[in-house]
Amino acid sequence: MIAKNTGSKIVGFGKLALLPGETEALPDGYDNGHPAVRLYLARGWIAEVGAGTQELAISTDGLGVPVSDEGMPSAGVAEALVEEAADALVNEQAAREVEVEALKRMTLAQLQERASGLGIEWSASDTKAALAERIAARLKGE
Image 1 (cartoon, helix red, strand yellow):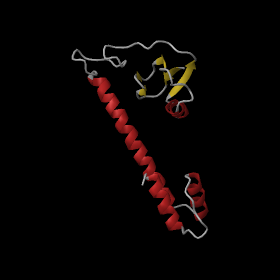
Image 2 (cartoon, rainbow, N blue to C red):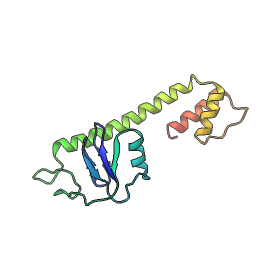
Image 3 (cartoon, helix red, strand yellow):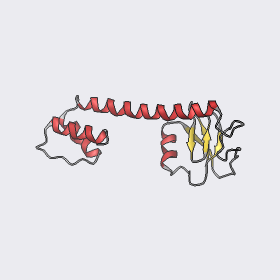
Image 4 (cartoon, rainbow, N blue to C red):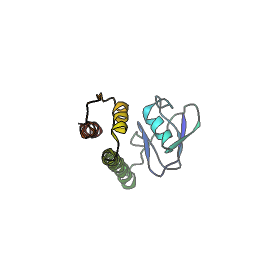
């Protein structure tokens, strides 16, 4: 699959780092059925611009990442990779916190529906508070 990075951040596929605006063939195994590719497509971070494969250009570090004379990722690329990872973690945590806060405003029927969607078993005798607590625990990964 040939993909274009339509986002504003670097996206990675195995050894390939796709900079914003770049178009490149994804490595073997990264087709539109791969979970990461599906997520990136759904969020509009990449666009499929063609099918097929081609050999990836490999830089001196063997990963397709620009390197300095010392063989380390260039400062700009390294900082961008760290920033992207940190942003993703912060965004994921913030989204969980927002969803946990939203539980307080849900009706019992809405909580039951959300619990079912998360695979949490519930019974008619569950209180709103108890069900919200179980959902929050699941969202927080407990």
